[in-house]
Amino acid sequence: MVPPSYFMGLSAVLFCIGVLGVLLRRNIIIIFMSIELMLNAVNLAFVALSRAWGNVDGQAIVFFVMTVAAAEAAVGLGIILMIFRNRETVNADEINLMRW
Amino acid sequence: MPLLPFLFLAALSIIFAAGVILQRHPVHSLLSLVLTLVVIGILFIGLDATTVGFLQMIVYAGAIKVLFLFVIWLLNLQSQPIEGGHLALKFVGALGSAALIAELLVFVLHLPPPVGHSKPLALDYGSIGKLAQGLFTDYLVAFEVTSILLLVGVVGAVALARRTTAGSAPGGAP
Image (tube, rainbow over all chains, first blue to last red; front, top):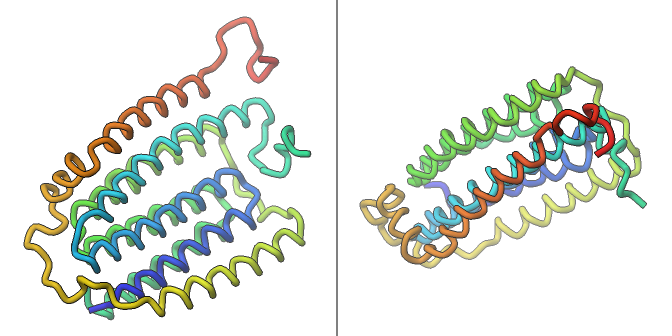
């Protein structure tokens, strides 16, 4: 029987890999994927704690996170597509119109 | 879930997750991410959350990632060297992530044992019926709001990605 804190530790590690991806990579699609990775790390923590407490509330939250991620992916990829059409780049450093 | 399979799956998911941010080609990153999601789905099933685990594999690893794949193909992205960027930002990023991971690990490894931990699980724990019961009673409002969110998301995506009709050159002035 694996204690829930192990799952939380794994979740923390995956979340930090996602943070690293957002900070280190400049390709906007890979930044987007790193955000998905962070969402999933949090999902894992939710499910582990839901199991530890023996109720399904955590699983309901995971369901909502999945839906929000789907909507986010649709809109985010639409934005990326638009940026690529107008600027011909997916490098986040070159998309600087709104930067001070 | 026994310890040994957990350690194996945990190592696998960390390796694949590292692959997401280390691969040069976006498609390879994406495949790495899909494998990470599948492994997390298996972990869900190991945690008796069967419905959510299969949803994770079908909806997340299946449907959402195919959307990513289509966009990568549409943009025709090629393999590129890991981008330069600011060295200071990378340094601060690595340092910050290390601090975050240390903090989170110290925190979660000292969690008190949950109250209901020793309680035996209900027989239908994690079944689709139990999950639906929660969704349609306690979380009914959130569930309905989610449907509106998806509708808005679809309309927004179509409005964003729509090619402007004849008159303006592609990629030209709005």
